[in-house]
Image (cartoon, rainbow, N blue to C red; front, side, top):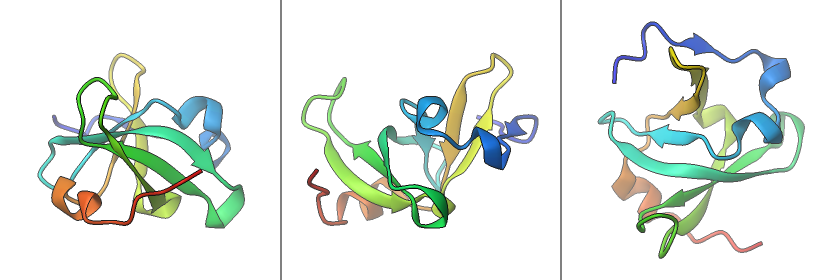
Amino acid sequence: MDHSNHVRLTTTELTASILEGATVYGADDHKVGKVDYIHGAGAGSQAIVDVGGFLGIGAKPVAVPLTDLDFMRDEDGDVHAVTSWTKDQLMSMPEHSH
């Protein structure tokens, strides 16, 4: 996916209601997961990303600093994120428990 024409979200748009459900693309530009929910508020917030699994079943939730994700909208207005993490790196992180 070419992200060069996608519009980055502003700081005021970085809210749980907008970010939750966003697809996350990794360093290799493949889908690596989906934002399940946002934990915390402000600069120390974390995105809980479901990695692996199929249709949300068997996915492993991991906590990623919100600052490690670049959120943007595509041509259709859908929100997604890009990160430098690979799927393997995310899978090796400790599982986040609520």
